[in-house]
Structure formats: structure tokens, C-alpha cells
Length: 168
Length: 399
Image (cartoon, rainbow over all chains, first blue to last red; front, side):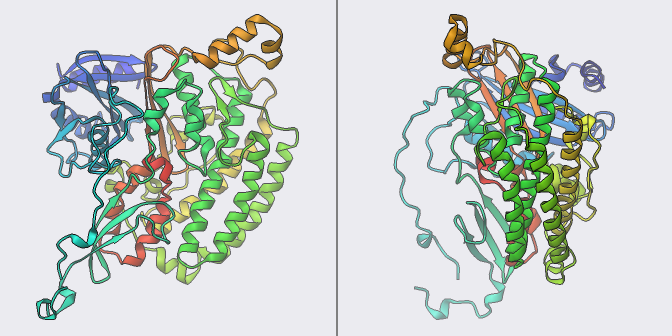
């Protein structure tokens, strides 16, 4: 199925949800609103004619200086139909958050934690939104464009595993 | 100090918390498991990754498009060529470049040699972790044969940086084909020994069968790809599903398991080595003559004789090195079949000489996310072989 056909099918499956759709280098891309996203993803996963059973990747791009500033990018893959789709949600700079997809795809759990860690985008409804690649005491979100590449971090207290409340 | 009276009468009732790692002698990779144990049974395993985080994606944003290639080597030290190829393909799609056919063949051959090296590492380490040390030494020996070839072609064993936007750095040497055939002859003998040593070995079998089982639904939901997904019975291989770099011209099979346990993962990788050998042999048979780079001064460095003897060549060289090739604005997601699964490069260009954003979709990272589920209900001793069969490469998982 070509990208254009897939976009047409999406439009008939969820009319009006995608605010923007285009095919770039053969890859279909749609932009959806944050509030409509969860139902849209559920339809993508559950409708047999779409069949997007893989959430391949979740990431974000920081377009510093542009409004809205952030884009959360979901890369989906349908094994039965062998087609891919990229879904984007645009987020304003102040308090960026989206709904978590951790209950739809298990892969979303760690991928969303990484986006939170790197970009500071919160995923509401995520069961365990902790930093994953950086340590808990890290200040800031390193993949934001305004995070200086040579920035030093404050020294942190040594964590003492013995000091915690051990149960015996 | 806890007074003895405060201890429960039956210690078996208690859940014990243990931290395994981050530098545990039995895990090849820096990783920490926060375990909750009921006796020796794993109740819960919370995996902590990130100990090898170098800020790969941030670093790539600092340099030119070509300067990112050495960073991609460091993602996966056993199969750096596949990372090189994935990155180059992604950038080339943004630029609208089609590389010469000989270059495509070279990339396929080198990728498959890397894949064999990667699988050998996984199998050898996995086997020696459950006690079959000999197999570890044998696979390391055969991996060395392959790395010798890689060294002869690229100039380095591990940090190869072999691809460029629009081609590869250098052509095969005249004896490459003979060397590969000779190495494969030895490889086959060694693999046959390994097969006899462990595939039907009682101890190995008992340690691997039924351990770390992941159902098809779970494997898909966790976003697993590569040998782990195929061991669960899902036949998905990027080389077949969305062929790149001319893979559609090659005749090979995709080994698929059925149970999704460690033993199936082992067998899938073992059989994939045979298929990769087939691909390389077909590639060496059919490889056409011709250039290994495109001839396009916008992306490819001029010959050194031009740089030293003509002002145009010198300027071209200077601009490409200092400003970088101007990659047209846009975005692309290019997936390649890495040795551990789908390795994806999502690249955003703003039309300048530096990548605006480069995201790597690491197969190991998602597999590590599923480890807690795989280990539930198994013994502490099963953590190591299960972790071994995931073949986590820290550089790629943590980036």
C-alpha cells in the first residue's frame, strides 16, 4: 500500500483526527492533536485494516525558537500489512505533556521514560515515569537544544545502600 | 544491627531485595538488576540501564554529517559496519542519492560478516556463561578470522568508520574474496564443532529450554525485533520486509523459532549464521565491477590529487570538511536489520551542514525493557543466560 492510500484509509477510519498528513520520501506522516491522540492510537492498533501492532519508537524533536516548540514522534509498524506510519504530536513550550501509551504497547514504557529523561516531556498516566539513561539527581534535560553541550552537573551525594530501610 | 528476636521465624516467607551489578563479573555489560527474590526465585526484576550513556545523539548534533560516522561505530562494537550502513542509508535517502551497485554489494557483504561476528559473540559468551567455556574460545577464534578480513578491508578491527555519504571509503583488496572463502572454510569447521558440543548437550539444553519464555503477543508488544522476535515465532526481518541496499537480490531464509525461550533464541542465531554465509557467498559471486562512491562534489570528497593540484578541488575539500555536506531539509526513518534487531535512524535535517536531530532506535534497549518479564518466576542462575541471549551491547542500549 502506498503512503497516500494509507493516509486516505486513516481519514476514513478516524475522520478529522489528523490535522495534517503528508508523504515524505515515501513515508506517511500525520500530525494529531494531543487530546485525540490516545483514541487515534487505539484505532491504529485495533482496526484490522490498519493493524499497527508494533510501536517501534517514541522520540521527540526540539524545534527551539519555533512555536509550538516540541514534537513527539511515534514510529509505528504494521506486521500484517508491512507498512509504516509516523505520528506526531506538537507541544507548546510551557508544560509539555502527552498521554502515555504504556497500556496500549509495552514498548512505550521505556521509550516514554527516555523521552521524559532527555526532553522533559511528561507522559500522564505512565506507570513509572523515572529517568532511565541519566541518574535521578541530574539537573535538566540534555537533548533540549538549549542545554549546553559542555554543561557541568553538580556533585551529588553518594547513595548509601546500607542506609536504606532494610527489611529483615 | 537487627536483634535476633526481630527476625521472622521463617525466612522463606520474606521477599529479599538484592542488587545485581552494575559491574557484575557474569554480565558482559554494565547493567544493574534490582531483584526481588523469593528464595532463589525472581519475583521482580527492575533493570537499570544507562551506565554507558555518552550522549550519542547530542554529540551528533555538534558535528558535520560525516563526523557522525565514527560515533555510529561506537554504538555496537561487534557489528559496527551495520550501524555505519544504517546511518549512511538514512542520510543518502535525505539527499536522494543512489549509491553504485558495487558499493551496495560491498555494504551487504560487510554487513553480513559483521552479523556473523555479532552472533558468534552472543553464542560463545552465552555458552561459556553456562559452563561451555570451550565454545566461547572457539567462537572467539572464528570471530578473529572475520575481524582480520574487516581489518584488511577497512583498516580497523572494531572502529571501522567504513561508509561515507554516497559510498564506502575504499574498495575490497584484490585478495578479499579468497580470504573470505578461506575464513568461511575454517568458520564452518568451528561451527560444526560448536554444534556437536552444545546443541544437543544435556546440560546446555536443560539450562536453556523453557527459560525466559516470551509469547508472540508479548514480544510484539514489547517492540522486540531481530532474533528475539523470530525466536517467538514471528517472521519479521527488515531485510525481507523492506529490503535496502539491494537485499532483494539475495536468496536467503529467515530462521524462525516457536517457543520463544532461550534455546530457540540460540538456534535462531545459530541458523542465521548459515544464512549470512550464504548471502556473503552470493555477493562475492555476483559483485559487479565499478566505482564504490558516487561522483558528486556536493557530498563526496575529491581525490587527493585534485585537492593538491587544483584550486577547485582544494575549495571543495575545504568546504566539505569545514561546513559539511548540505543535506536537504527534511526527515527520514531508515531501518536496517542489525544483528540484534531493527536498528533505526530517524534523522531530521534543517538543510545545513550539521544534523538537526539524529535518533537511533536501539534494538537492545527495547529488549532490555522486556527482560523483567522474561525472568519472572525463574531462578537467579537463569538471569545470566537470559541476559546473554539478549546480547545486550551497552554502547547501543545506552547510547
